[in-house]
Image (cartoon, rainbow, N blue to C red; front, side, top):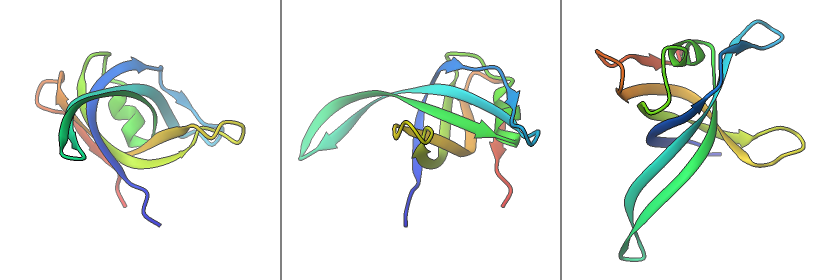
Length: 110
């Protein structure tokens, strides 16, 4: 089944990098998105905040980031945990659009 999301937004909150019990780097963040979209032929303003998590190389790349940076993130949605079915973006690709000189980019190796 298809489950992909690509979104551009600003880092609103960024948790310090931590490690899973298996020793994998992990970083959580909140991404704020604002844009103009067409819905049913009418243009409208869209704003939302999305919880996200990055593992491995993506988490390491985020360790250099600060709130306010603009990023393009891609990945898949999954439930936050077994008790909460709220979606969280699991990042598989992140590109810093603004805020880091020379445009740091991280991409999951498949």
